[in-house]
Amino acid sequence: MKIIGSLAAICAVVWIVAAIHPLDRQAWILENLLLIIFVIVLFFGHRRLELSTTSYFLLAAFIILHIVGAHYTYTRMPLGLWAKDSFGLSRNHYDRFAHGAFGFLLVFPVRELLLRFSGISRRWSFWLAPAIILAVSGFFEIIESVVAELVAPGKGVEWLGGQGDEWDAQNDMLSALIGSLFMMAVVALTERKRTLR
Image 1 (tube, rainbow, N blue to C red):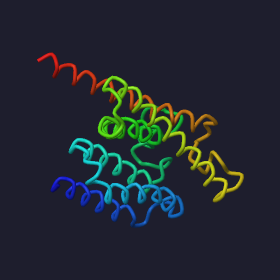
Image 2: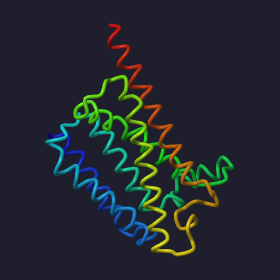
Image 3: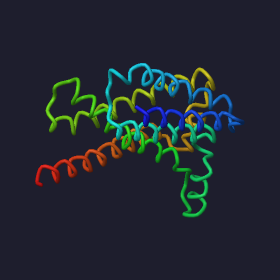
Image 4: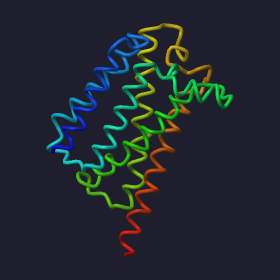
């Protein structure tokens, strides 16, 4: 329980610091609305969810990545701009990195919840957890599109930070799926090694 409190405190400090002069206040507010709802659900549901310490570390890592991305906006994140300039990339890939991290970091707790509450087999959990990540990623892309039309009518992909990529939403979803499948491969190999001992 101390670890959960410590992780929550670290995330809160990062959020407070990031709330000071974000590059785009309107985008920052919109990016943080869903995060705040997510954190409230975690706060009030953590006793019922009974996630492992590993899951809470992974959740905290994603929350921090998101907080930093929202502060700078995903398209103007300095680390992504540095990589773009240094390696001659066509875009700031922090957005894709964050979507991949969404899949990689959140699929573990999703699988944990599936195993605890759904009754599915361990084998099926390796496939269903990434499917849930893909579905949630798609749902968020739809929400982003609706919000973009409400907030910036006619600007669509550019307001969303598509950086000229008409397939940005699909590529973001693919990044999340790849991240989740990679984590499931790591978990499967780790569990297999344990059973062979």
